[in-house]
Length: 120
Image (tube, rainbow, N blue to C red; front, side, top):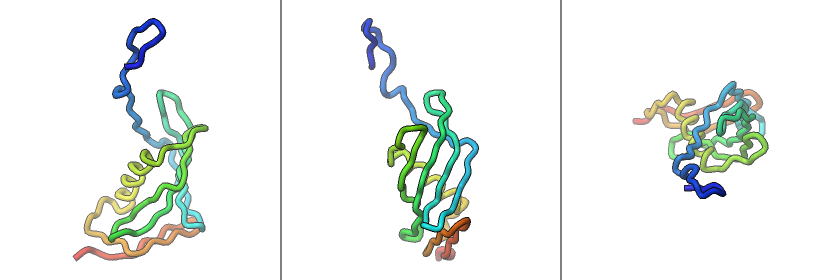
């Protein structure tokens, strides 16, 4: 527990949770192979602008979104937090279809192209 100057307990670190939901999301596909996600997130009841940069790749038939950089307001976002978002977003792009095998990914200005097939 954290304690104030008067010695009273304020809250425990386990009481803190970082669940980031993206509001007003916008997704951009860039010619350098990156996906940029912009929007807003609430952290500790404060709305902050959010910017994430991810680099997609295929690995063992799966779509993987690697963290490049991120900002929540003026603060850099930790990679571990983005890894969780990237995993969820990759599943969303494939609509959770576990029968799909991704073999190649290409990102150009305004487009994301996935190549692959169905798992046998």
